[in-house]
Amino acid sequence: MEALMLEYPWLDELLMGFMGLTWQHVVMWIISGLLIYLAVKKDYEPNLLLPIGFGALLANIPHSSAISQVVGEEGFLWVLYKGGIANELFPILIFIAIGAMCDFTPLIQRPIVMLFAAAAQFGIFGTAVLAAMLGFSFENAASIGIIGAADGPTTIYVASRFAQDLLGPLSVAAYSYMSLVPIIQPPVIKALTTPQERRIRMGYQEGKPISKTTLFLFPVMVVLIAGIVAPISVALIGSLMFGNILKVSGVVDNLSECAQNELSNLVTLLLGVTIGGTMSGENFLTMQVAMIMGLGAIAFIFDTAGGVLFAKLLNLFRTEKINPMIGACGISAFPMSGRVIAKMALQEDHTNFIIQHAIGVNVAGQIASVVAGGIVLALIPALAK
Image 1 (tube, rainbow, N blue to C red):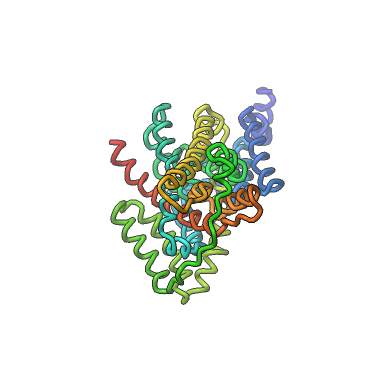
Image 2 (cartoon, one colour; image 1 turned 90 degrees about the vertical axis):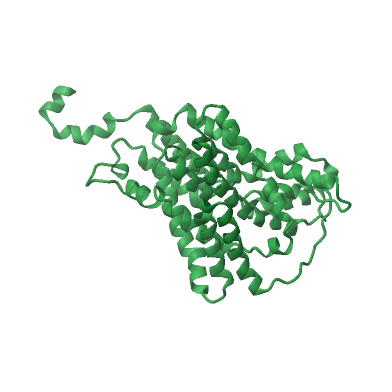
């Protein structure tokens, strides 16, 4: 073969894809196919998993021009990575879009739901400690813990700052577990609650009407308070609340709709395919990545359990009992988690409608996950010294 290559140099260019093929490439093709299958056939986060799966396919073709880092011949996935993820631009733009989609009225009407959302962030810090004990650096351990927030953009933002080499597996884990909310949360909740607790009724509560002024001032105050507590979180919480201000101001409906639709769709597409482009076989098929996927599941379970157990704790001191299942909605998977818990309540008692309370906690989880991400961002430089 070598003699043939010397005699016909053009064969080297023609056959280098076959010559460079390894078992890692083949395994990553299978993983890529699985992600695409979950997106297309199972409808699991298709907006992210489909681009991620195809980006991974492009990244695992030997000598792929899509991920070339040769100066002057940079592949488009490498250009997108440097221009959108390495500088944290894509996650920030996604937060603007998410903010424009959020309605914080339930949270303003019943601020107590923020307690459930805070309790549901337990898995972040518990898993970070566990990951550090298993040998991960503090920066990597904290980034792994963020998976438990069930907030893909926050995971990507933290990872792009402190764990760029783990960005692919962290992102895949975060979005995979988000899409598996209907599978992961019910068994955890049932293991921690009794049928009687799951049948606790929480009647409809008509909150006081919220003025437009209050809706407008709320994101401003959140930015000021969170920013003063953790200035490094301003980019995260600020972009989220900026998107919300576009919505509640009532004077830039065109910008709000653009953020919710065109901006969200475009950045999601670019973000997904770029993340997939980081999933090369030699970096992804490692024991470290397997541990990350396992720890991500633990973080997700811990967050669900934290919210449920906190609700059960409150019930010890309340005469009007809370259905502890709503505590699980404190994660950021909105509105999927709220819908899953409401469906579980109906399965226990077809006349028990707790969707209002579940969605209220789920909305609070949006803010809590971003605040938790900001706290992690603030703690990593301090504790890593």
